[in-house]
Amino acid sequence: MKRITVIGAGFAALTAARRLRRRSPDAEITLIAPSAEFHYLPSLIWIPPGLRRGEDLRIPLAGFLKRLRIRSHPGCVTAITAGGRTVHTDRGDVVNDGLLIASGGRFLKAMPGIEHTLTLCEGITAAETIRDRLAAMRGGTIAFGFGANPKEPSAMRGGPMFELLFGTDTLLRRRGRRAHFRLVFFHAAAEPGKRLGDKAVKLILQEMHRRGIETRLGQRPIGFDAGAVRTEGGDIPADLILFMPGMTGPAWLADSEGFERSEGGLIKADGHCRVSGLRACYVAGDSGSFPGPAWMPKQAHMADLQARAAADNLLAELLGRPASTSFKPELVCVIDMLDKGILVYRNPRRTVVFRARVLHRMKRLFERGYLRRYRTPVGTRDGAESLMP
Image (tube, rainbow, N blue to C red; front, side, top):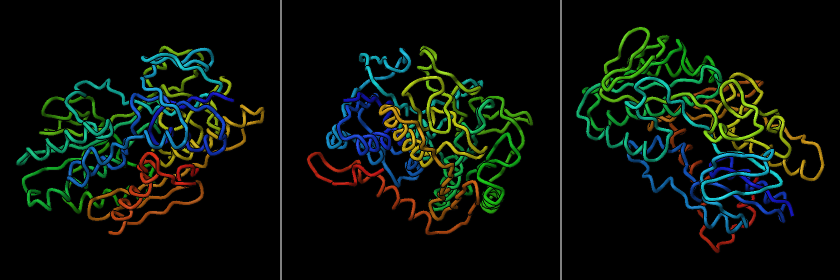
């Protein structure tokens, strides 16, 4: 019986766990995470306008893990040694025959004054803080922006900031308060969101202009104060600063052995999601640096695709077979605005972009379907759904 360890409790980790159990009914699978909960981060954008509460997005995994016979090890990873075979946590060590890392990345926090900003994707607490700050404001300037890892351009998450920007505008209009607010979007590039494609960037900037959202583009942010965004082109006074920094690898890498890191500090992997230089060790999602086109995103959909490939290849290697499954680079993004959305689909052959009111509803329906497999109560038999790839 092979011992397989999965690190994480997010999209990539749970998709990998389901895939591993489906393909290997007898494996001993252990999932390491601080708590046995899944946080559905794409819907954080709906906490500030009140469409979701934190408890709606915090999904207990006890039933899911019991159904799939996966052992939960509650703890935070502190290091990985012995060529990937030993995972050290603050609650003890876990030994494995195969390792799949899906712990996510972390935001870069080196910019001066970053403590004066709020970062939506840091989690439910951050989204609730943004909600409360917005509710308390009677007027003023709100600045929105996102950054990148200069050594790893793909390690960024800009889509949620566009959604937060447009959603805030829609919310203020619905409450009859938009005239009391100045919304400013800032970014170092003249064309933010370039990875979405030229047509998407054009639509996004047109939407900002149509809504009266000011832009400060092509001016690199150099720091923040309590009441301003500091850029190379001058300060942007702001009463609330919402900023998404670039990303890098997990903190435990600093104390781990044998991991080759990319220039941006992520775990270096090949096109089969295999960690460079280590046996039976794979990575999926935000903590990895993968070969692919420059537009390849850090998003839940891409993490799911990588997780499936990583799980298949890990099992193949444990059986003495070559890793042969690749993931397809694919970007699927709905930029939600509460009243409509912009769909962006991109693969190596084509790009599709369009705007429609129905997309807001479709995004909510997708959330419901995705979470159903994890919300099934303990003792309920959900058949093949819990083992879907």
